Image (cartoon, rainbow, N blue to C red; front, side):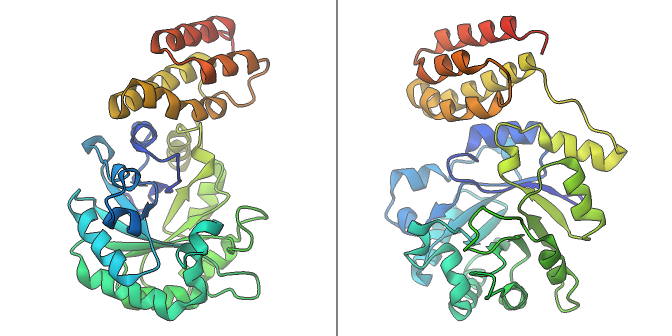
Length: 319
């Protein structure tokens, strides 16, 4: 692992194996699975179990798990250990209502005793390194991240990723990197602190490293339809220059590979369906692209999709 890793954040319906493999090819240092429900895992729910699919090309990788019950989390960890990830990551930051309503994700920011107890038990229960991803606090009146970091370090975690927003903010407003840096600058905190939230460009990542002195940058939404961001960031950190954004033809090849990986993983029908949401992101801001986007998201035959890709190449060859 480099001194300043560039990390792919866990994102529901985004960071699945096909997307992760592409990110790996573009130089990401560490990735996490979509977050997995502990209750789903222990009930052998098919969707939850499928999220544990890991391919050798993706490593090192962490499995992120969420839940509200210590017993269920421990049983889920036992199942996760069987796929031999490098890390188990605990989600104490998901702001989505259906997760929070069950007492999981960001809900734990309102019960730090339970958060610490759960973490302590999991660390004792597994031989794998345990990390945590969380937020600054429940809302602006309850910024608890400094106490959270100290408690989780005491519980035995190996690193902490902090999204610089509160649960109330969801994904609105601006991520507060200063508050993340304050955790890092606390002399009592010895574990690595990774920043997450609004890291959209190579220049942002450089700030996280050089100005805020954090230990790594976790990229989430900025990587959607843009897996080459990892290559651009790493080149910029090393040389001060960035690679060009891929041409439309190059994006077509990336899309084609994404589709092929998805089909290999889930079969032709599901692979085609699950790749559809990615096309708009891959071709974002391309003028007059709408007719081709409609074709891509309605076509259900692999050979016909390849024909659409060729049409796109011909139509936008100079872009």
